[in-house]
Image 1 (spheres, rainbow, N blue to C red):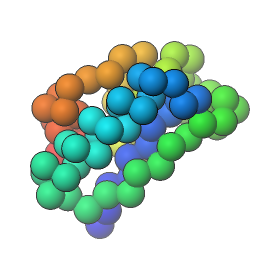
Image 2: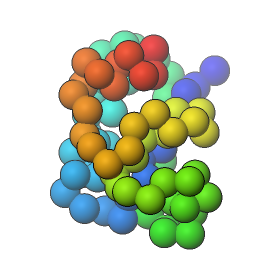
Image 3: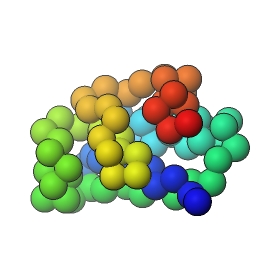
Amino acid sequence: MAKKLQILGTGCAKCAKLAENTEAAAKDLGIEYELEKVTQINEITKFGVMMTPALAVDGQVKVVGKVPSVDEIKGMIA
């Protein structure tokens, strides 16, 4: 079953970097995944997130307000 990876952010540079790192981590792990960018503020706040960027894996918020490294993200999605 594919992991649902969601980047929560309005499209800032950090959001783009988080998306890039998340995709790299998923590809390195060789997992099936679906990457979704959640850019609407009202959708982002439904996750309880007040700071962006944030990463949600299968609906669970794993990191908020920073861009973890590819290796850190691997640990969150593995």
